[in-house]
Image (cartoon, rainbow, N blue to C red; front, side):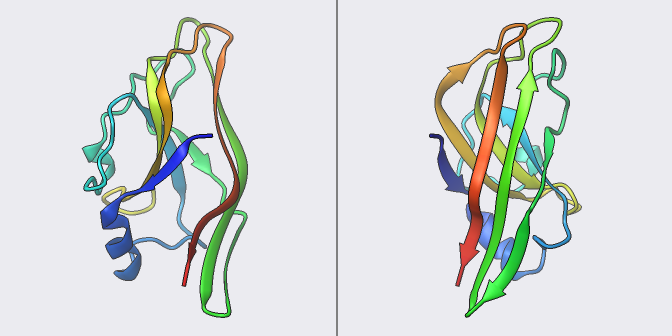
Length: 138
């Protein structure tokens, strides 16, 4: 399972009202360049090349529930995003990065490290799977 890492500026962005998990559009894009915790916006990330089954900007994430109970706020995701290589290989990738597509600066949330680079060949897929609380804070 891929390890999740949050971007440090994400916490500030939450408290300053940049992210609204109930209404904003979030996306996951792919990269083969290691993100750092200090990255704050999409422009800080080197996205993989588009084509052969990968579209610039990645895919949209559906936030299934977003609510507060007893002082704890939770945003949950139950989704699989799939990229299938067609017409050639998808560029090498290792990291899946979530960002807020609604925010003017495309502020980052976090990234998943899959441990080593993969290059999906024609007909092969890469999947980002999330069946848990994406964010839970109190």
